[in-house]
Image 1: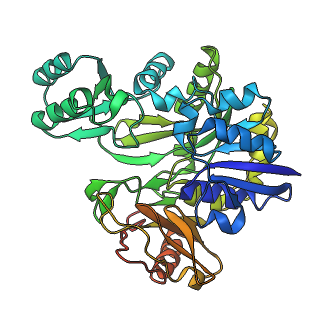
Image 2 (image 1 turned 90 degrees about the vertical axis):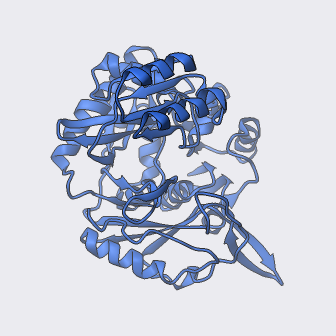
Image 3 (image 1 turned 45 degrees about the horizontal axis):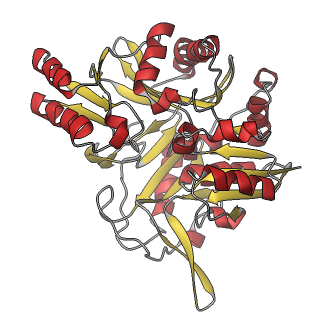
Length: 423
């Protein structure tokens, strides 16, 4: 029997805690800081995900046997290194291995040395040199801040002026802080995007089903970029043979390269791929579960998630086998009015108890309030909820998800209507 700490506050962490709670070995589950959804199945701790000292203290006080880190920030900050130094079991890559996401320059170097298919890129630490490169090459361009930028450090530029502005914002206006010390100006790839997740322990790789997310705020992939407005799994256009080929060409060689260079990887490795007419190319690597992809991948997991995470941490991933449901899963994100721009919070959420029993509602930007002795979930972020449903087909899962989306209301609520419509 095990006490578990999940670090994070989003729908990804709610989904992880929900799945871990199904394990017969899980006793007490803590989520730091958590949200209104995790409060229903676990004990929330009022600790920021980036406060490593406080998280370490809480893990010891609550006799935590395994800590699972959701977001990339604390991973890049070295939470795994700190916990391991104190003899505590923790799921996730070390600070050095987490550079696969925290530094796009590091990631591009690993890909080049391992022969991973990816776009061509030039790296600049000087804005003048970056501008000269733009002047010498024709658009389009992709300008990427090197470091973590809360998912906002990548700009697709259709014109030279857009590219020059992206370089200025990152390197001179310091919009992303230190993340913009260096930028990559990269080949602009075209095709369809797919998210490829795998459990990795050293050179052992256990693939997960692929998924697709929707980054633009409005139907038809219009409007501003967001953290993700929905997802589905599996994509019918990217079959199991495509998945196997991609893992063989991408995930496995990267895991081997990291191990060979003295930076063995432990955790979830998540490359984002662009499937071009010339094959799959890596856009970026992530060092954790995706969001909103987790909300449609983990509901398809038939196996005990705790068993798999422990096998990763203990270096015996090659001795377990994850089993997956054949059903498809579709998740629709409900967002606050104005998101991804400025938005207001604190609005009561109605209808959470009206959804079908086999439909999952994973909380992200929510918190609990108490009024006249009654506890109420209210909005507390940009992305508020993910409504996820399983079905025998994507069409059935989509219908169930949207049927239940209609039952939930809060002031300013908006969502995309085309999640999985052309999957």
